[in-house]
Image (tube, rainbow over all chains, first blue to last red; front, side, top):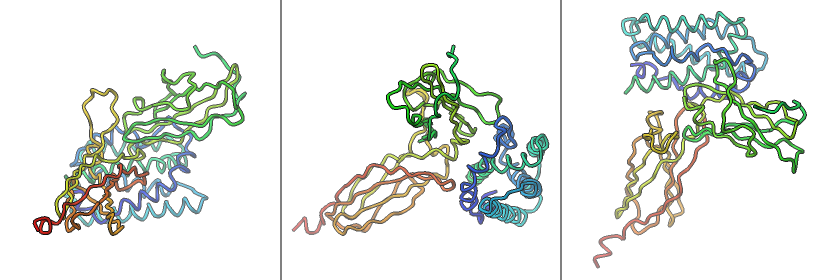
Length: 153
Length: 221
């Protein structure tokens, strides 16, 4: 289960890093009526069997798009974002090492959920999209926390 | 219908925040500065992040108190919200004062558990009941905060009144038995609930004190 794979990941470190920059990031995001992840219906309905694939895809989304597209001047924010990025890298490796592809299959629903996130991202100017995605990390972390517990039950 | 007012005629309310405990989400603010004695009223609106428009709440329009219970409006704790309030006095009103993004799932404070103590000669058993989530109606079925946070834990603090020593232990199950205690000694206990992850303010339970039984061997003499 996801728990065995991510057991070595200290989520609290990631949540602490995010907590320190959350207000600054979210206050800079002025598009309150647009979300990237918060189309929660797509994340909420993810079945346990798809959790691994969606986790992997969203980690890739943050690593390959969000962290690259985001431009930041504040050293404090930069430091915390790089802590989070390193943790995500570690989580990706933990997922890859932990199971063969057999277990981390991607159903059509998982693919659709990931595509919705990318579609939402593409609808915004890239800097705004990256900023908004960073501000929504609490949604992703809460989802991991919730599914990290549930898949272990 | 709202009477039109001259915007920016008043300073904004200050320190607008959500006070959230067990998903009871109350918006609170301080009156605008330098308006002592004026009969100021307030109007509140809220916004569901990702939706399209600000929404009014009938219970918090032209109110004189400086808080507004938005628990019902923000009851889907997996969504995120904003709220704003403006001050009104006669025909003047302030600009809106707005909260940051509020996420009940990761920001609500977890209230203390119910704590039941029973004593033995050298032991105290503690039974903990997780706090309940806010309910829209008193008759609604209770939802335990443990159902929302399956990783809910407790921090049990114990104080030996004789030795003046205090120790704490983190537990996940709802029953704790303290053993190897001194007989005939008063122990005081308080407990905090917490969820690993986002830092949240802890709310300790009321301190409860019980005495272990007398040493049964000396009692027989």
